[in-house]
Image 1 (cartoon, rainbow, N blue to C red):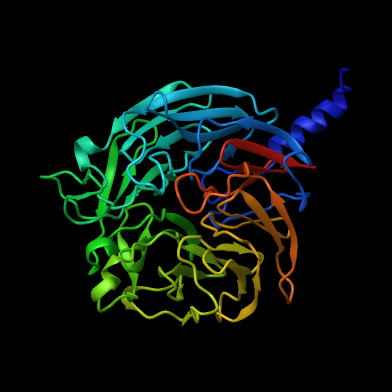
Image 2 (image 1 turned 90 degrees about the vertical axis):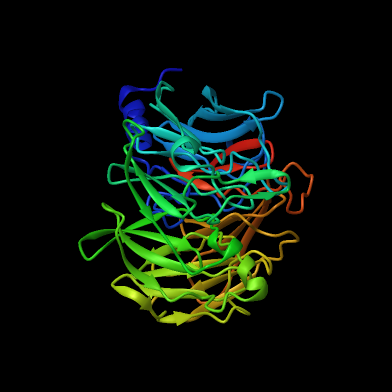
Length: 446
């Protein structure tokens, strides 16, 4: 049946005006979206607009622009790393492109397709842990392809590199916080002998793939503490575009246009003694209400730094009691005036006041497995996926923790932290949730 013109036009306009989810942390890079009418209760059969089989599991997050969804995945039988494009309205696979071939997995925790894609509506860029990247237009036409090992060396992280590329202000940013020398781990060579292994942020022209600048980022961290699996975050402050980088035992603020560093939080691991040398960092920073939040690893505090900071020895304005609020893996979210911190190990969520660090509430989800995805906050609700693929929904705001629902979306295998575990965060766009589990991509909506 053909829709009346006015109704078809209204539906098309509504879809076109919906918010995109252009990178792994969403339109504001803080895990939130202004989308409305998102359901709290759903299942593998209830509230499903469509579901499609994906080639294999990965921690990468679905990225949505208009009527297209982009994803990375490994293809085991062909030993390929691919970028995928799906129709956001139907789930139909529109195209898949092989970006790299060879090994797919270097450890038992993840695979080389962990970095999420990024798009600005003109380019969609896929980067893999083997340092190979490619850019396509939204129809799947190759714009450029590049192996960064040739110019900057292989990424020297013990566990498989997982930082996601980011597009901002007409530049593509690639963050490589790594060990400062080549080494071997579980039989795989990391880094490249003869190359400078200093950590860096690289700005690339998204139209050509050519380097614009390279900002070295040295810290006093040692061994594995030099490594980070966080991604760059960008925010406006005082008329300036700021790039935030977390890792190497510190948080730094940079001029986004030039990469120049102008503020550095005092390190949370000053001594660097004993096993403290082996605290890699996973969560990315998050900005809200003029405050930058950074999570130190392994049951350590969460620290707050004013966005107005300048200088090399900035003291945090507050830090949390890690027995109450901490995050080892999940990146916190900011939504309507509050930070939301997900504690992977204790399976708790905390609502925190940005200016003071006051914990408004902390609640136990009751999950029987860990969370290593990051929370997505939309339409007054916090969505979190655990290792099994169960999506927990908690009410945002309010004076007390309120669990709204638990939605079993996984394949029933109940993995426990290996490469088969669900680590992908949820994207919100077009009035829908896009949920990646072990073997499916779901579009959930009213």
